[in-house]
Amino acid sequence: MKYSIRGQHIQVTEALKEYVDKKLSRLDKYFEVPPTSDAYVTLSVIRDLHSVEVTIPLPGVLLRAEEKSDDMYASMDAVIDKLERQIRKHKTKVNRKFRQDGGLKTLFRDEGSVAVQYEEEEDSLEVVRTKRFAFKPMDVEEAILQMNMIGHNFFVFSNIDTQEVNVVYKRNDGKYGLIEQG
Image (cartoon, rainbow, N blue to C red):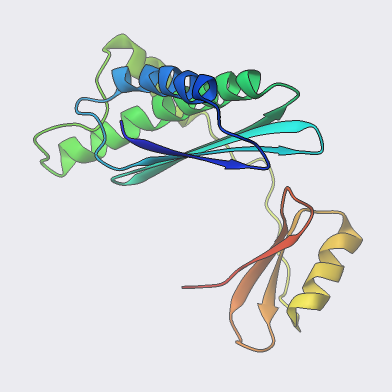
């Protein structure tokens, strides 16, 4: 797997590069053919928290994980564990889709009985609460205020400027994001 490593507020040393390479190579065992797309690794240090973010774009699925801790190596270990869980979760679903579409090769390696275990895990996803509410047209600033008032980290609203449904959300860095229809 090819990857690019970027450092924010940190010098990416050879030792860090080698550790990232060693850890990312653990993921190769899950793929029939090594992915041709680049994986993106961002290492950063903010307020004494060592953060690792890894994004791996694949056909039909985007693997992404982020972890923060007091140690860069511990953060990298945790990110790889998260990515392995994501791969196992998506493996059965993606392989089934490729088989149904008549694809010759599957994206993830089939591991027999392990696939059945994760298929059961996938079926256990359950909606435990449903909410309905009328959209009040508002601008982005008002939506952010509403979100903060109710104490949530996202808020769905009807944008008064575009007449479309949008979502504002609070980012991990404390700033705000906006999701618009595409």
